[in-house]
Image 1 (cartoon, one colour):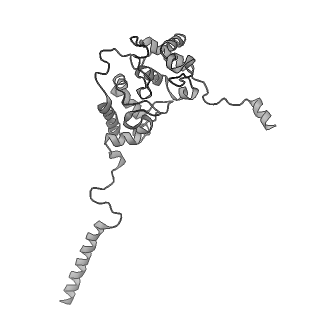
Image 2 (cartoon, helix red, strand yellow; image 1 turned 60 degrees about the vertical axis):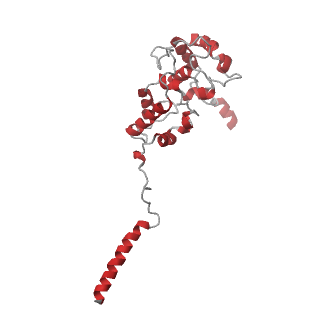
Image 3 (spheres, rainbow, N blue to C red; image 1 turned 135 degrees about the vertical axis):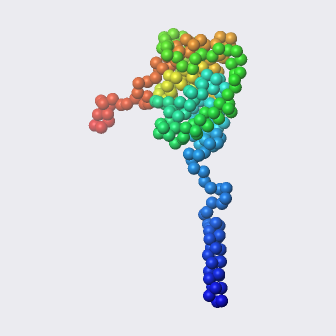
Length: 245
């Protein structure tokens, strides 16, 4: 009898010990298990972790353009957004986010971000009957004519020669132009930067929207201001030798 009691007591203690493991320090509680990063699908979480740092909280803009800009979302279709999110934009500050391009996000997560942006911030009737310029153009602009277009449509805010005015800063700054592609310049001219008070292509001159050719030409002029070697000029060899001596 004594032996049986000892065995039963041992079994009971073992079961109690096993049950006690569920409350061991550091063990996640039910419903609190960590989510595998590749399985996150919530738009708010994905946008906050991957996009908000540049495009701003709620898509309101920051170092990069506002994504909560209905004009932008109407001009740039879903494929454009998906390609930019997945593969990035070469020679700019926009990185690739898809795993297939060296990023951290799955194809489903890229889709969740793009769909969420359009679902939250697009407005189908934003143009109110206006005919928008094409997002991109294969035809080259005329930079000489672009200088005239700039004077007519842009200089009242950005100043003579694009070096800044009372309403807006310089848009020919070498560091800025080095970080944006010609397509990004075109996008800004068409869609504006509403978060900065910059109008879209329809509103620079009331009642006289920019034509597609105007846009191509002013972009060509802006691109012509891009320095070959951005940043501070390198010192000449003669200057370096003088400093060493």
